[in-house]
Image 1 (tube, rainbow, N blue to C red):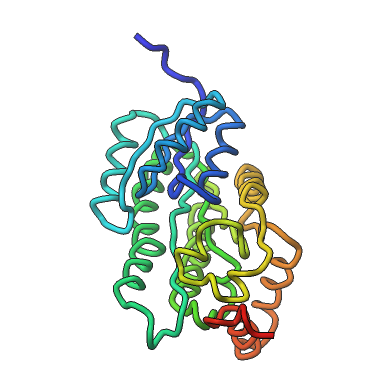
Image 2 (cartoon, rainbow, N blue to C red; image 1 turned 60 degrees about the vertical axis):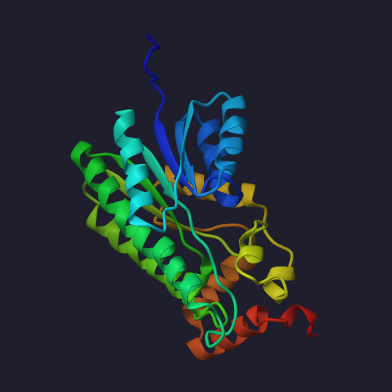
Length: 267
Protein backbone atom coordinates (compact mmCIF):
# COMPACT_ATOMS: atom_id res chain seq x y z
CA UNK A 1 0.00 0.00 0.00
CA UNK A 2 1.31 3.44 -0.95
CA UNK A 3 2.23 5.73 1.91
CA UNK A 4 -0.20 8.68 2.10
CA UNK A 5 1.44 11.93 1.08
CA UNK A 6 2.13 14.48 3.77
CA UNK A 7 2.43 17.31 1.24
CA UNK A 8 -0.09 20.10 1.08
CA UNK A 9 -2.73 19.71 -1.63
CA UNK A 10 -3.71 22.31 -4.24
CA UNK A 11 -6.30 22.44 -7.01
CA UNK A 12 -5.72 24.55 -10.14
CA UNK A 13 -8.28 25.09 -12.90
CA UNK A 14 -7.41 26.13 -16.43
CA UNK A 15 -4.04 24.48 -15.84
CA UNK A 16 -3.23 23.08 -19.28
CA UNK A 17 -1.43 26.25 -20.42
CA UNK A 18 -0.79 29.93 -19.73
CA UNK A 19 -1.16 31.42 -16.26
CA UNK A 20 -2.93 28.32 -14.91
CA UNK A 21 -0.09 26.02 -15.92
CA UNK A 22 2.44 28.40 -14.42
CA UNK A 23 0.44 28.58 -11.19
CA UNK A 24 0.49 24.79 -11.04
CA UNK A 25 4.27 24.92 -11.47
CA UNK A 26 4.53 27.34 -8.57
CA UNK A 27 2.61 24.97 -6.33
CA UNK A 28 4.70 22.02 -7.52
CA UNK A 29 7.95 23.88 -6.88
CA UNK A 30 6.81 24.63 -3.35
CA UNK A 31 6.05 21.02 -2.44
CA UNK A 32 2.31 20.79 -3.09
CA UNK A 33 0.54 17.78 -4.55
CA UNK A 34 -1.85 18.78 -7.30
CA UNK A 35 -5.20 18.16 -8.88
CA UNK A 36 -5.27 20.10 -12.16
CA UNK A 37 -8.24 20.63 -14.45
CA UNK A 38 -8.92 21.91 -17.96
CA UNK A 39 -11.28 21.16 -20.84
CA UNK A 40 -8.45 20.12 -23.18
CA UNK A 41 -6.50 16.87 -23.29
CA UNK A 42 -3.39 19.06 -23.04
CA UNK A 43 -3.98 18.75 -19.31
CA UNK A 44 -2.30 15.33 -19.53
CA UNK A 45 0.84 16.84 -21.08
CA UNK A 46 0.87 19.47 -18.33
CA UNK A 47 0.60 16.71 -15.73
CA UNK A 48 3.59 14.86 -17.17
CA UNK A 49 5.68 18.04 -16.99
CA UNK A 50 4.64 18.68 -13.39
CA UNK A 51 5.32 15.09 -12.38
CA UNK A 52 8.81 15.44 -13.84
CA UNK A 53 9.32 18.21 -11.27
CA UNK A 54 8.59 15.70 -8.50
CA UNK A 55 4.96 16.57 -7.80
CA UNK A 56 2.16 14.07 -7.27
CA UNK A 57 -0.42 15.10 -9.88
CA UNK A 58 -3.95 14.01 -10.71
CA UNK A 59 -5.96 15.38 -13.62
CA UNK A 60 -9.56 16.12 -14.51
CA UNK A 61 -10.55 16.89 -18.08
CA UNK A 62 -13.85 18.71 -17.75
CA UNK A 63 -15.72 21.64 -19.24
CA UNK A 64 -16.15 23.90 -16.22
CA UNK A 65 -18.57 26.15 -18.12
CA UNK A 66 -21.17 23.46 -17.40
CA UNK A 67 -22.59 22.39 -14.03
CA UNK A 68 -21.70 18.81 -14.98
CA UNK A 69 -18.06 19.80 -15.44
CA UNK A 70 -17.90 21.52 -12.06
CA UNK A 71 -19.57 18.50 -10.46
CA UNK A 72 -17.00 16.26 -12.12
CA UNK A 73 -14.18 18.29 -10.57
CA UNK A 74 -15.88 18.33 -7.16
CA UNK A 75 -16.27 14.54 -7.32
CA UNK A 76 -12.58 14.15 -8.11
CA UNK A 77 -11.68 16.29 -5.09
CA UNK A 78 -13.99 14.29 -2.85
CA UNK A 79 -12.81 10.92 -4.11
CA UNK A 80 -9.22 11.83 -3.32
CA UNK A 81 -10.18 12.18 0.32
CA UNK A 82 -7.73 15.03 0.94
CA UNK A 83 -8.44 18.51 2.30
CA UNK A 84 -7.84 21.31 -0.17
CA UNK A 85 -5.13 23.52 1.30
CA UNK A 86 -5.21 25.92 -1.64
CA UNK A 87 -7.16 26.40 -4.84
CA UNK A 88 -6.47 28.63 -7.84
CA UNK A 89 -9.78 29.24 -9.63
CA UNK A 90 -8.20 30.37 -12.85
CA UNK A 91 -10.13 28.97 -15.83
CA UNK A 92 -11.53 31.72 -18.03
CA UNK A 93 -11.98 32.94 -21.59
CA UNK A 94 -12.53 36.21 -23.43
CA UNK A 95 -14.52 37.43 -26.43
CA UNK A 96 -13.40 40.45 -28.43
CA UNK A 97 -15.42 42.50 -30.90
CA UNK A 98 -18.30 44.90 -31.29
CA UNK A 99 -21.12 43.77 -29.04
CA UNK A 100 -23.63 44.25 -31.85
CA UNK A 101 -21.65 41.72 -33.91
CA UNK A 102 -20.22 39.22 -31.42
CA UNK A 103 -21.63 35.73 -31.07
CA UNK A 104 -24.17 35.53 -28.23
CA UNK A 105 -23.50 31.89 -27.45
CA UNK A 106 -19.77 32.55 -27.05
CA UNK A 107 -20.55 35.36 -24.63
CA UNK A 108 -23.02 33.26 -22.65
CA UNK A 109 -20.43 30.48 -22.47
CA UNK A 110 -17.91 33.03 -21.21
CA UNK A 111 -20.32 34.13 -18.49
CA UNK A 112 -20.92 30.51 -17.53
CA UNK A 113 -17.17 29.88 -17.19
CA UNK A 114 -15.96 33.22 -15.81
CA UNK A 115 -18.88 33.81 -13.42
CA UNK A 116 -21.25 30.89 -12.84
CA UNK A 117 -18.59 28.19 -12.49
CA UNK A 118 -16.60 30.45 -10.14
CA UNK A 119 -19.59 30.75 -7.80
CA UNK A 120 -20.48 27.05 -8.15
CA UNK A 121 -16.97 25.79 -7.35
CA UNK A 122 -16.41 28.39 -4.64
CA UNK A 123 -19.58 27.35 -2.82
CA UNK A 124 -18.24 23.81 -2.50
CA UNK A 125 -14.66 24.78 -1.67
CA UNK A 126 -15.55 27.44 0.90
CA UNK A 127 -17.81 25.03 2.78
CA UNK A 128 -15.06 22.40 2.76
CA UNK A 129 -12.44 24.86 4.01
CA UNK A 130 -14.77 26.45 6.59
CA UNK A 131 -15.43 23.04 8.13
CA UNK A 132 -11.67 22.76 8.80
CA UNK A 133 -11.02 26.43 9.55
CA UNK A 134 -8.20 26.83 7.03
CA UNK A 135 -7.49 27.28 3.35
CA UNK A 136 -6.32 29.65 0.64
CA UNK A 137 -8.29 30.73 -2.44
CA UNK A 138 -6.86 32.54 -5.47
CA UNK A 139 -9.18 33.98 -8.12
CA UNK A 140 -7.70 35.03 -11.45
CA UNK A 141 -9.46 38.31 -12.21
CA UNK A 142 -7.83 41.00 -14.38
CA UNK A 143 -7.02 44.68 -14.42
CA UNK A 144 -9.92 44.71 -16.92
CA UNK A 145 -12.12 44.30 -13.85
CA UNK A 146 -11.23 47.83 -12.72
CA UNK A 147 -12.49 49.68 -15.79
CA UNK A 148 -15.01 49.77 -18.66
CA UNK A 149 -13.71 47.57 -21.49
CA UNK A 150 -15.22 48.48 -24.88
CA UNK A 151 -14.90 45.70 -27.49
CA UNK A 152 -14.40 43.33 -24.54
CA UNK A 153 -17.52 44.63 -22.86
CA UNK A 154 -18.87 41.37 -21.51
CA UNK A 155 -15.43 40.01 -20.63
CA UNK A 156 -14.55 43.06 -18.54
CA UNK A 157 -17.87 42.78 -16.73
CA UNK A 158 -17.15 39.14 -15.84
CA UNK A 159 -13.78 40.10 -14.41
CA UNK A 160 -15.30 42.98 -12.45
CA UNK A 161 -17.69 40.43 -10.96
CA UNK A 162 -14.83 38.12 -10.05
CA UNK A 163 -12.84 40.90 -8.41
CA UNK A 164 -15.88 42.08 -6.41
CA UNK A 165 -16.77 38.51 -5.48
CA UNK A 166 -13.23 37.89 -4.24
CA UNK A 167 -13.12 41.03 -2.10
CA UNK A 168 -16.58 40.44 -0.63
CA UNK A 169 -15.84 36.82 0.15
CA UNK A 170 -12.54 37.77 1.77
CA UNK A 171 -14.32 40.07 4.22
CA UNK A 172 -16.93 37.42 5.05
CA UNK A 173 -14.23 34.85 5.75
CA UNK A 174 -11.73 37.06 7.59
CA UNK A 175 -12.21 35.30 10.94
CA UNK A 176 -12.45 31.74 9.62
CA UNK A 177 -8.83 30.90 8.82
CA UNK A 178 -9.52 31.16 5.07
CA UNK A 179 -7.70 33.78 3.01
CA UNK A 180 -8.91 35.01 -0.38
CA UNK A 181 -6.73 36.72 -2.98
CA UNK A 182 -7.52 38.24 -6.38
CA UNK A 183 -4.82 37.92 -9.05
CA UNK A 184 -5.13 40.81 -11.49
CA UNK A 185 -2.87 40.48 -14.54
CA UNK A 186 -2.76 42.69 -17.60
CA UNK A 187 -2.02 41.52 -21.13
CA UNK A 188 -0.09 38.26 -20.75
CA UNK A 189 1.68 36.09 -23.33
CA UNK A 190 -0.84 33.25 -23.50
CA UNK A 191 -3.36 31.93 -26.01
CA UNK A 192 -6.02 34.23 -24.55
CA UNK A 193 -6.03 36.90 -27.26
CA UNK A 194 -6.06 34.37 -30.09
CA UNK A 195 -8.98 32.47 -28.57
CA UNK A 196 -10.79 35.76 -27.97
CA UNK A 197 -10.41 36.79 -31.62
CA UNK A 198 -8.24 39.76 -30.66
CA UNK A 199 -5.08 39.13 -32.67
CA UNK A 200 -5.71 42.27 -34.78
CA UNK A 201 -6.05 44.63 -31.81
CA UNK A 202 -3.32 46.81 -30.33
CA UNK A 203 -3.62 44.81 -27.12
CA UNK A 204 -3.34 41.55 -29.00
CA UNK A 205 -0.28 42.73 -30.92
CA UNK A 206 1.40 44.44 -27.96
CA UNK A 207 4.33 43.21 -25.91
CA UNK A 208 2.92 41.15 -23.07
CA UNK A 209 3.92 39.91 -19.65
CA UNK A 210 5.51 36.52 -19.02
CA UNK A 211 2.87 34.16 -17.56
CA UNK A 212 5.52 32.64 -15.30
CA UNK A 213 6.14 36.04 -13.68
CA UNK A 214 2.40 36.70 -13.37
CA UNK A 215 1.91 33.32 -11.69
CA UNK A 216 4.83 33.92 -9.33
CA UNK A 217 3.29 37.24 -8.27
CA UNK A 218 -0.05 35.51 -7.73
CA UNK A 219 1.37 32.61 -5.76
CA UNK A 220 3.40 34.87 -3.49
CA UNK A 221 0.39 37.11 -2.84
CA UNK A 222 -1.74 34.05 -2.05
CA UNK A 223 0.79 32.65 0.40
CA UNK A 224 1.21 36.08 2.01
CA UNK A 225 -2.54 36.36 2.49
CA UNK A 226 -2.90 39.56 0.45
CA UNK A 227 -6.32 40.69 -0.73
CA UNK A 228 -5.14 41.24 -4.31
CA UNK A 229 -2.09 41.71 -6.49
CA UNK A 230 -1.77 43.61 -9.76
CA UNK A 231 0.68 41.25 -11.42
CA UNK A 232 3.26 41.75 -14.12
CA UNK A 233 4.63 45.02 -15.42
CA UNK A 234 4.52 48.45 -13.80
CA UNK A 235 2.27 49.51 -16.68
CA UNK A 236 -0.45 47.22 -15.30
CA UNK A 237 -0.29 48.95 -11.94
CA UNK A 238 -0.67 52.33 -13.65
CA UNK A 239 -3.64 51.11 -15.69
CA UNK A 240 -5.34 49.60 -12.66
CA UNK A 241 -4.83 52.82 -10.69
CA UNK A 242 -6.21 54.83 -13.61
CA UNK A 243 -9.22 52.54 -13.74
CA UNK A 244 -10.03 53.55 -10.18
CA UNK A 245 -9.05 57.22 -10.32
CA UNK A 246 -10.05 58.56 -13.74
CA UNK A 247 -13.60 59.17 -15.02
CA UNK A 248 -15.11 56.06 -16.60
CA UNK A 249 -15.72 57.71 -20.03
CA UNK A 250 -12.04 58.66 -20.27
CA UNK A 251 -10.88 55.18 -19.29
CA UNK A 252 -13.38 53.58 -21.70
CA UNK A 253 -12.09 55.70 -24.58
CA UNK A 254 -8.48 54.75 -23.83
CA UNK A 255 -9.34 51.07 -23.64
CA UNK A 256 -11.33 51.23 -26.87
CA UNK A 257 -8.24 52.50 -28.68
CA UNK A 258 -6.38 49.36 -27.64
CA UNK A 259 -9.09 46.75 -28.04
CA UNK A 260 -11.03 47.89 -31.13
CA UNK A 261 -10.91 45.28 -33.91
CA UNK A 262 -8.29 46.25 -36.49
CA UNK A 263 -6.60 48.73 -34.13
CA UNK A 264 -3.26 46.94 -34.48
CA UNK A 265 -3.02 48.37 -38.01
CA UNK A 266 -3.89 51.93 -36.99
CA UNK A 267 -1.29 54.53 -36.12
